[in-house]
Image (cartoon, rainbow, N blue to C red; front, side, top):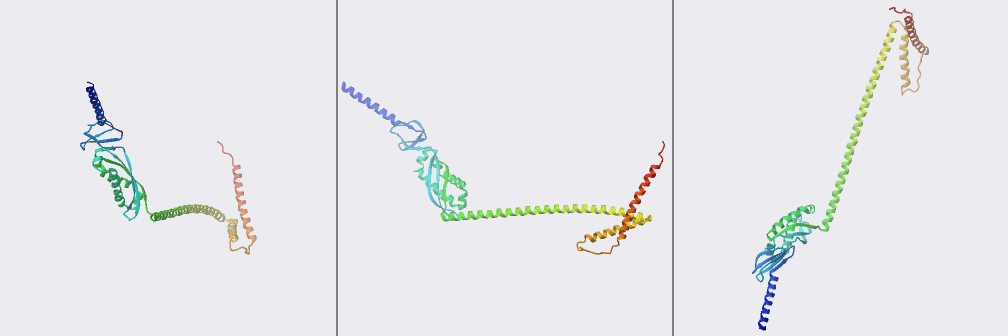
Length: 324
């Protein structure tokens, strides 16, 4: 009886241990960011998601543990020959993420190495079809072209390439020196162009100023000529009136008027002689009594004029007032 109990206890213990082992082998806990592929007799059947999962012990097994988080892959430096035969050193970085664990596990072997070689090959292809100046100034275009090509090539592997960046483009030292000289020459050229442009603008402004000055000067001369002509016109009118008065006096038989006319011409002639720049000293026989007599004649005209005005006022005062 005791032996039967011992055997039964051993059997129960064995069953419990076997059950624990089966539970342990059939329960799989998948951490966040990971996915496990399950194979049954060596054939893929399904993928375990993050969390607690059950499989059939001894029949199913974990085939591959795939990291589903985005990963970074450094592209080592390599030599690239550009279209204009410049040899440069290029390196970069690739950002990728597995979207399908089954394809990533069974469609390609050593996916990281395959992605790296594919990226390096396409870097040589894309950058080799461009000139050095284009490589240095169009990195965004290079990155976009690389991303398009590599992403299309890795899509059957269940891999999504999210970004490819070219980190460093290193030309040879002699080429860098030549580029520095070219850049300096270009800057000197721009500086010369700017100086010439400034001088041209200054000359244009100076010419505009001279033009405006000439226009204003011409307008001033025109205004002065207009004023001079107006003054000469008034002077001529005054002279005409004076000549008319003298002519009337001569017609009336007044000899003093003739003396006034002759004296005025005489004095004008003396004034012109005195203002002449070529004659500083001159001698001229002048009959002083004639000039004095002419001036006396002018005085007589003025006196007669004043006397006539006085008589007119006196006759007006003696006139009897009108009766109404």
